[in-house]
Length: 66
Image (cartoon, rainbow, N blue to C red; front, top):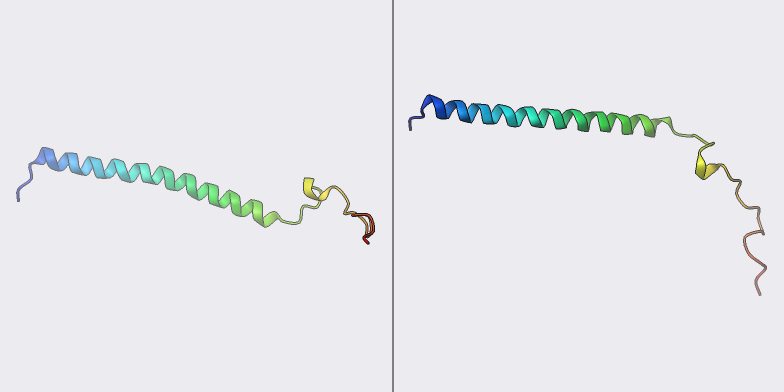
């Protein structure tokens, strides 16, 4: 099977452009993953919203039952 130079150029340029696009997306995914790991590894921030209010004391959650 013979391929003309022009057709070979088209094939090669198509493959290279696909690889370049995948490389850009891979960079975005890699940065996103590293940011997620950084955020998860900080841990123990006790002054953030879910932890700013004190827990209710024992016996204050509901009236005494029957």
